Length: 610
Image 1 (spheres, rainbow, N blue to C red):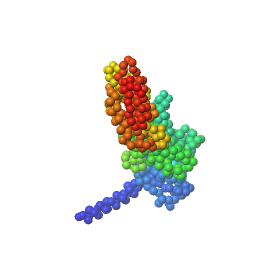
Image 2 (image 1 turned 30 degrees about the vertical axis):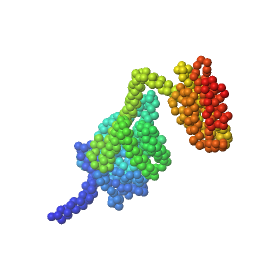
Image 3 (image 1 turned 60 degrees about the horizontal axis):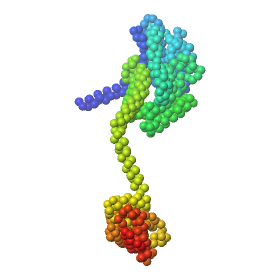
Image 4 (image 1 turned 45 degrees about the horizontal axis):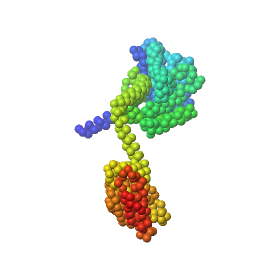
């Protein structure tokens, strides 16, 4: 039982593989009277003439019958080729009256189309059209190649169609009742008018906005819409209808240039719309590369035929579409809400193109008005959605502006509310800064002690204070022994280090916060000791002198180390004395220490003479 099922399955599989050749076998098209339009899919076969020189007699010969390929239920599509293509189809008129028929080609960019129609003499009448021939020579002033012919009553005739183009050789083939064809023209051109009107309105509206807003991305949108619209004009055959095709350039070249120009302006518009130069620099560079590539394509299209230059053009499509979609998705993820219009526009275009492909080339879906015009409908929605995206971009800018204004008002309100507090805080900071500045102006930069100016002010201040309190004030003058010799021997940098060490010893010996240590000048220092009598001053002086001596800073003197001489004086200030007298006494005591051999402490008190 299992083996039987296996055999049946294999037979079904073989039959399904072989089925297309029988299912899609080309049969005569029966023109039933109730129908007005007859697609030729399933009813034609074709032959590729690689030489392009085959005559009708050769085509009619029996040798060529085996070379025909069935349509397999699809529209004619042989790709980009320089060869001619012969199409054979048979029509049967079951009625008792003559049928006035029209053969309509679905593609307007066919360079040359010749229909061979059987005549009453047993031969064939010839009709030729295409965009290489004036529009006036067509049977109808129509944008697509079409042929008018008759089919006799109860007649069956085989017709031959020779096609040649420099573009992709693909087209649908439809037989229509002549009256039905003519009756459908007003509706067809009305729909086309509505289609192009949407483009014109969007372009005019955005030109007006650009003139007032000066937004460069809006100008790029206008250029994109104009070039995209021109692409449709070439595809629809309207350029040939204008009569300019034979005088300037043909529809195919125009369509190819417009196609490359569409991608050029599209990537530029995308980059400027999202400000990729600032928001996504690498993506901006990638878009500039695609734009340069598209520009090169435009130049090469004008030089080389499609058969020789098609891959770079197709690659731009393959690269650009994912890049634009990725950019829109990226900025939508980043919170750019206008990107949703942009993404929807391009997804619609892709959907429309997919529907056309499934209808015309794969025959996956039924051919209806919606499927045949899906790409056009999607294109209109794309233009509208992109215009809405630009409008939303302006709305975002306005919202950002309004938000910035609200924040400014809030900041102004907070500033007013906290102005007094801010002024107080700033005043306090200014006072602190002034205090620090004043302190810096009172300090000696090298030693970190107070300078001579501060010493003078402090002595005057403390003198008056001691005068009021009837207390003694002690002054100590300190001089580094043989410091000039030290500088000459060890250098000024070592001398600076030595002075810093002396200053540290003085600061350590002073002890009280009220004591004022100052650099009096050069290697000479001074120490003001408020509320200190002479014995107390002498004790502090000896402590400082010994502290300096114990550091054992090397020197070339007999002692072998750096030492200091100190003079101490103490006075109880009154109306008959002055600070200068105290300085003189301390200075005399210092001189006395030097006279007695240095590295010692001498003193004077009150009215003691030298």
